[in-house]
Amino acid sequence: MNKDVKEKYEVIIGLEIHVQLKTKSRMFGAAPNDTWGAKPNSKVGIVDLGLPGALPVPNKTAIEWTQRFGKALNCSLRKFSKFDRKNYFYPDLPKGYQISQYDQPLCENGYLDIKLENGEKKKIRITRIHLEEDTGKSSHKNGKTYLDFNKSGTPLMELVTEPDFRSADETSTFAKMIQEAARRLDISNVDMEKGNMRLEANISVRKKGETKLPDYRVEVKNINSFRFMRNAINYEIDRQITALEKGETLYQETRGWDEVHGKTFLQRSKEDAQDYRYFPEPDIPPLVFDEDYFDRVLANLPKMPWELEDELLQQGVRADYASLIAYSDKKLKIYEEIKSSNDIAAEELAKLVANSKTKDEVLDKLKKKSQSSAKGSSLPDDELKGIVVNVINENPKAIEDYKKGKENAIKFLVGQVMKVSKGQADPKKTQELILSSLT
Image 1 (tube, rainbow, N blue to C red):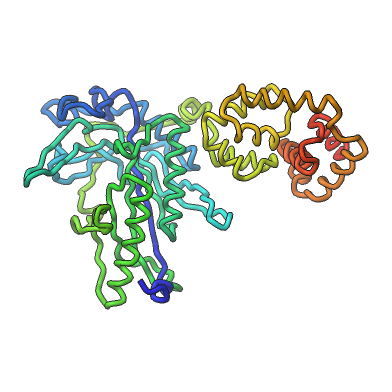
Image 2 (image 1 turned 30 degrees about the vertical axis):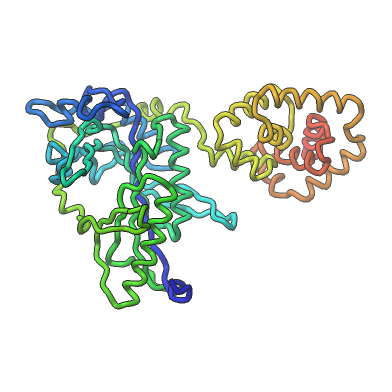
């Protein structure tokens, strides 16, 4: 497409991300949830098939995991929530309706800051995170449709964003962070090849300078890789701009992605909420939560990778090392275990961990470094004091943070001294000098 033509338009994208939860049983029934690789229709449940007399009972663990996930993404957790029936007829939905959540989801009004290519951060608003049951699977061969209901009723968490993305790369960055959050909380395998995590992008374009959202959006459904999502979005941008330049009208519709031919294809006209005739699920009472419940469920919530990355950066760790450690469970464990029992600057330890494969390898390097220091490699006191003074003078924000009670500011200053001294400063002595200078 002509670059000048493309420059006239701005893309508007919102995401829907579905994550299957790895609970032991289904969302509303007792059938086992581990069905990957099983013979078709060999692990089905009476509730999930909608057999007469089978009543749904919500999975308590799935609800708690969704609330923990929502809290990690800065969502407000509702004290009153409920399940609803989403009515539509499709072969892989045996009941003729899906138990989902409509107007009172478990989590709402969250956000996540993504990092742009220029290093700046951008806030992506999360509209809601709700819980529902997955459908069965349809496959088509030789003019026939085959149905497998093994995954019917799998707990499915759906996250919906506001239309805050302006490029395919932004959506990919956000989706990868969602995947990491689910892994860190250990609530899903988020294996996209197995369908544990599925992406849907709502895409439209408008002329630059316009502020009103377009009166249409195209939803590309069931994308199972970050690369496919980027390709699908970029294709849709070009397709929609080309259509608008020709004076064509774009309509609300659902499309699929054909990776082989590199293009989207029409599946059906897009439904609105009223088309599903939502109403409260009559067989499940409303959900009511109090503060004691939330205190218990949200206890011991782990820090998210991006939070740990920011902490490492504040401690003076190089950006690539901070990212590598924060997003690797193995390296993070090594870093935290050694840091808790060794008086070593964060920057120095991060470098060793980033460039080592095992904890023993890091410890061996630390031992050799310590022996070298003992032979007189550390700085003279006068030289160290001079570096400390310069570092304090050059980092007024860190000083301000420390005076506000942020202890990590001292670690950051120690890291800066270690950086200037090329690792020759004694971390313990450096910290003592910094503290004495600030009191």
